[in-house]
Structures are given as structure tokens and as C-alpha cells.
Figure 1: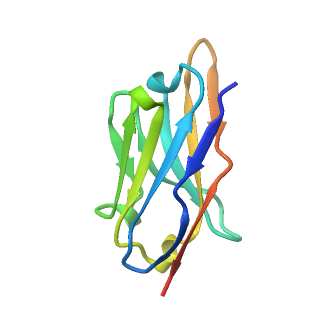
Figure 2: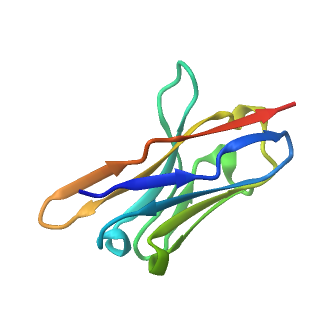
Figure 3: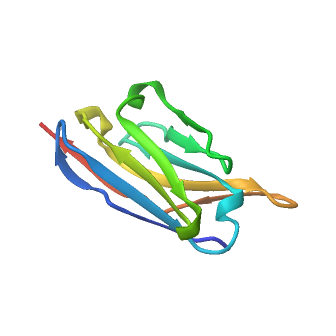
Length: 118
């Protein structure tokens, strides 16, 4: 069983920055694709950014140029640097770890709230 612990959320003014962190337990982190998703009230959870085990990244269009996903395999940690935050970035942000090792696996963190104020 893998546990994901997120941190770094909070309240920030529009135009500000936050960095989210997600640390995974266990030994499969380096083999896994890591993702950040977000969910605003009444809206389906959406992918924000993803980074593969090889370091390939992908972003939803609305955060390109503002958010950066990165990973540190030595620390079992994935980061989401969020700059120039906008009101519409307000959501609960979830960390996801997934991959295949004999069978598919897919784990979620508990979520961290990001609130952007005007």
C-alpha cells in the first residue's frame, strides 16, 4: 500500500505563487507516473499536470507557462510550482501515483486546498 502526503496549499492573492509537494511511501515512486489533479466545488476532478518516470511532462492548457511539475526520485517527492495564480485556480489539489508492476496501480493523496483571492 502506498501513501501520498500532500503539503503546500493555502491562501494566496492573485498573481502570487505556491509550491505543492507530495511525498510517497514505498519503493515504486521512481517507476511511477505522477500527476496533480484539481477539483473545484461542483466540478469534476481534472488533470493539471503529469510527469512520467522518464521525466516527460504534460499540462492542461490553462496552466501552461504558469505551473511547473517536477520530481525528485531520491526524496520520493513530486512538486507543483504554481506562479501567477488566478482566481480560477482555486480548488482542492490531489496528488496521484500510477503505473504498472505486474498489475495496474493507482493511488491518491488526501488533497490540499488552494484558494486564490482577489
